[in-house]
Image 1 (cartoon, rainbow, N blue to C red):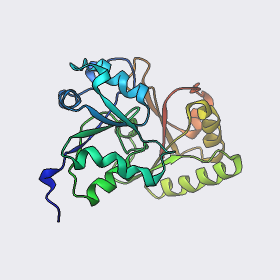
Image 2 (image 1 turned 60 degrees about the vertical axis):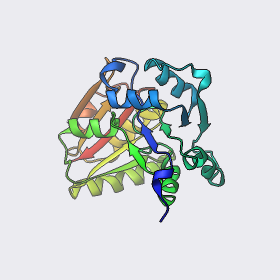
Image 3 (image 1 turned 90 degrees about the vertical axis):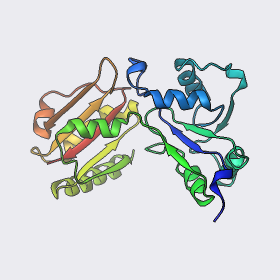
Image 4 (image 1 turned 180 degrees about the horizontal axis):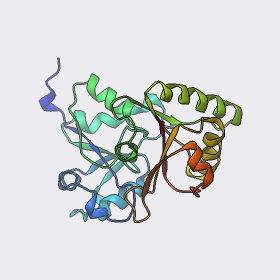
Length: 238
């Protein structure tokens, strides 16, 4: 096994979910590590720089180094992102929002770091997925995150019905959609699920407009919220 002490550490740096109340949702540990690091792997450089600006980094931003890692990055290029770490320098992955590698690119780089015995250090932060589950009142002992639901209407209906069956067996099901398709997804959930199934909607979490509400499908049908272009997590359960 390689001597991991000669390598830098890979820090997983969370980002805020909302521009509201930034100071309340960035732990001091994260602030210290961002001030310590000047090499970052990012999904979107603009969002990463915005976070760094909020944290009032002491060094000029033109002294920082950024490498892009998103869903379009060829797997063959991911190893190149570890060069600084292999040379003994620390680096960080900054996500666009929430936690790195959770519904977010980065896991391939982290997996490669483990194979090379590079220490991976996840830092604490907010996750819309976990915050919604915490506030849902649904089963938090057995749950699954399913990512994005299919766009095709027939495939979407089939997927929703499949998740409903898992939920009725006691496993809470979590999923999401692109913000501009939230209303369509909500309508399909209400159409394809049984009236007594419970649906939790977590919307705009940590912002001043944040809400988490759990109702039965039947009750949601009486008053559908407008979720268009808002960050939303959907959870179904019993």
